[in-house]
Image (tube, rainbow, N blue to C red; front, top):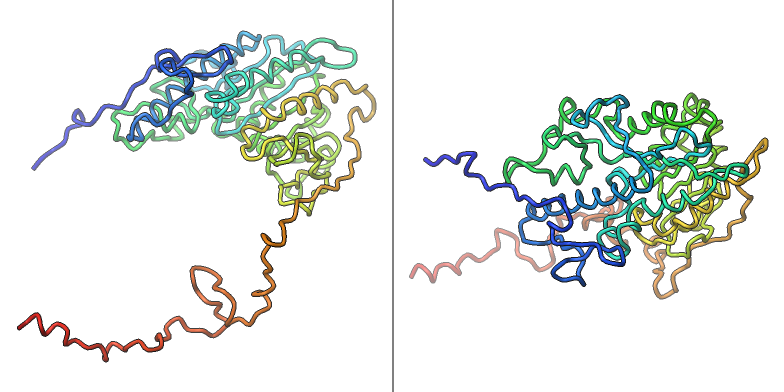
Length: 432
């Protein structure tokens, strides 16, 4: 009998969490390239060992996060630990970023990212590839916002608050909050352990256990503590982060408390249907003071739908507000990167609208957009089988005939021998 000891298990791979230690640098185009081969970007598949590759990605993501955070801090943003009052960074917490002078601002922009991304990150495919660090993160967005003004009578830049819906798993060993991808690549006792065991007691952050809890905490605790009572709030929601914000706002009690402060809402790649919302006044707000940008093959800014949706396109348009093309065809995480100019220009236009009884109102739009129809050669005529007799129609699923056709799958093939008719004399020659 053999017994394997814990000490005999293969060690978990270790990588330094800095770009130089990993063999990379930031070139003059702000792109992360290999030191040995400057024409190459980040290489994920180092070996055929998945754990080895995951550990390298964990270290690279941590190095990228450090680089992005240092640039955000250089722009005047400071890191705040939640829940408020956290005495030490070794205690369970989730970090967010906010302008150092947020309390003095009359206009505050709240950005809620996707739940799959780390704080300040938009898309690693851009940050670590063609595009560069600033473009693949919120650094460029913050820079543009800091060049804007807060209103017709206020030339100061708006305040900025970056929420963190992604890093909500606390690691006691690392003393830091992790995202979903980081939790899978975090160090383990050995390379063959099953992964990080996440429990409510050890790995959840007080009052920020889930993304929904975090959104609630930002609106109910952080905003009152760090902003003026009369400061106007402008929201940018990315992907499922936008959905979670809408789930929080569309309840009557919540909306009655915040509707006087929220000036506009930019929905970037969200999928929350307006007909599922409960609060009628929030639906009116979406129609009048919100805009959505979606993935589409059309040029940036193309009007896809009005507030009532567009039945002539397969694109999701049930946002309850005007819907525009974001200039990105496939990836939601790249939407703000491609639509940044349009989104931030719209926020500035809203902020510069003279104050009045209605302040900003979406213009009435007439949408004539419709998806292009396939050529006749590519669009099959389904009526040929839809109107055919049941026994002549193709199978519905997994090769099974429509039960209404009365066709049995157990019928014997014509000409096939029944079991009792099979000739077994073929084996007799082997016995001779």
